[in-house]
Image (cartoon, rainbow, N blue to C red; front, side):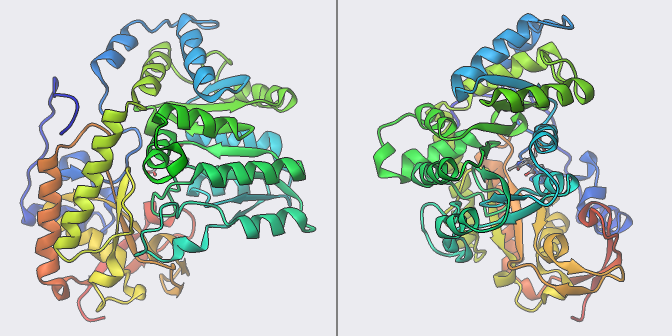
Length: 454
Ligand code: F0G
């Protein structure tokens, strides 16, 4: 059961299928054009969508809004320094601000950033400074159905080849957990081996640690050596294998806004501090209010609670199991922050050119008012301005992201029942065609229409 009870409630909109058909069509069948009032269960993102605890609210009241050197800053710094062990702690307004500042200070045009998988804003920030983002996921990640425990790992053989090769590698970035790769964890063994390779080749090793606590929980469950460690101990070990981190506190900080850039290297930190002050805010607040800093610090203490992490893991696995029983497969084994549905397997009559993942995501909205994110050809495929798909994504997935401490098991039952309804008559689900297909940031801006014959 959830190791907390509910003190504040917020009604959720209950709508009819007729209503949803109308608003979804009016918004060009793009889920980003739906509003909060249109959505019953919102699984679009686990970012900034969590529920604050009573202690976080109380911490917010203690927030000190002094411009420089606020008491909130010292509390924030203490928690971050203890958790990560890094010398230089910079608050920022969210994860991508940390990425922008770090890559601007560290990467030169033409250099390569190597990762298990870059998240999309991370890739964009690498490319904006003229560097190249290269993903080297473990080969195990390609098998969606296998129960391999650490499908988020980086491919160490490929990494060594790149590091020993002629190319100029500017940094190695490990995303824990691997959001682009099905929310799968990275083992401490893989982190340690990566760390050793980076040291050997003199390349900075940085963690994208947005879901560091969830990764740590999965390490305690799946990596034998750490069975008797607490998630916090594992998280501390992980941070200490790297030279710094970028961290969106909107995930495992359980806050609505916030981020962290933390580094050991003093020269690099000085360059980052300059960019921080020029673009985010003075180094003791970095674009956050005092109350945000205090709520972040408290969230970082709460998120490694084993009771909380266990329930979250079990709730996500429960949703994945219910879906599978209903005939909807997802990427195995289940992680914590999301269930990644395998739309291609459920809807074989819809080819990638008719956006299989988008078709399932759309049906979830139309049938149940459930909003989620497509991670298939609409998002990752190569598409021209006329909306024609030239290269499909490797998988047609749909991500059901689970906000932290927000939905109960009965909400998850509702999601599972809606999926089961779709799985009874999958051939009823129509495909989609792009009618407006902007090349930049397409998923946020495109418009589509339904196509009954594929
Ligand atoms: N890194 C990872 C692994 C992420 O998942 C995200 C955001 C970011 C960096 C950027 O952080 O949003 O605070 O600027 N992921 C959200 C998601 C948007 O829905 O997965 P941000």
